[in-house]
Image 1: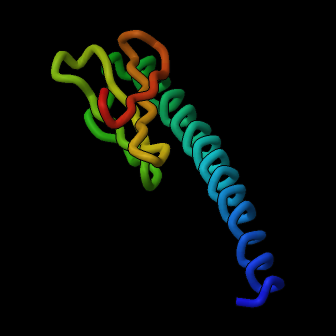
Image 2: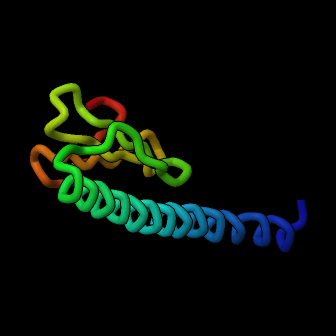
Length: 101
């Protein structure tokens, strides 16, 4: 293999890795923003009706689940690389769960 071709091929590797990291970061920020909108919508519905909704129309990749006790809910999305970000209304905070959690 020609040394110029080899240099070109190996120069593409860092660009590919950087693109993956950048896209993962961007998707995480967009999904977090959408999830925060869902949380505020659910809290507004709770204020108006007195109970959390059973179902809600969530954007692609985000899931909303009302707990059986009907006093709390969970919103979560996948960040990629087998990591999920989960918001639990009971504790009012976000937590990351990896593949072994």
